[in-house]
Image (tube, rainbow, N blue to C red; front, side, top):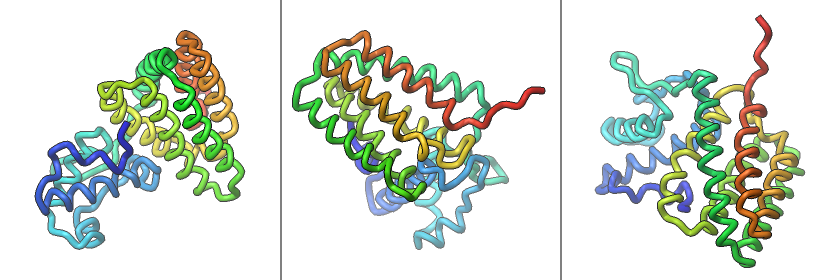
Length: 235
């Protein structure tokens, strides 16, 4: 699975203007996925033009790409607004996402190699080390990136470009929902238990146990919403 920094090879960013819009797209998208821009916030074209020192065209192209990803909405006479999804849609998404990632884990369990497991273990150790970092922001940003690496390695073991391409947008949306809907930097203080889930998935993969790998992955993804949503008070 390609990393976030490799996701501009789609034919969207050819030419000088395209390169500028692609760079802006990647930069603003990272801010959205990291939760640096909250749901409901407006994105100012003029502010982006000034920050990046570009004309209006690459700014608008970058915003159109972000709208296509389901991260912002471009409203006539209003401008660009970071999307906010209702809670039931967030839950629907994670149910779908859990099923998809569970299926990938099952495939990976049938194709895992000792080398692939070693690579997974190396990423896990970095995540465990990160959990001891005293800075919450470092833990939050670092976990999002390392968590993606962990799951990308599982996709690599599954060995399917179709899987990698299809999952990329879902991972972006997952990171976006986690970091912009509810508590700020929600996973920064849950790294140890998230890594416990990773260890269970890893053990199933190493054992070639597709059924358990699928079940553990689904449970891991489904549990995510309980960590970042505000508790719902009784009426």
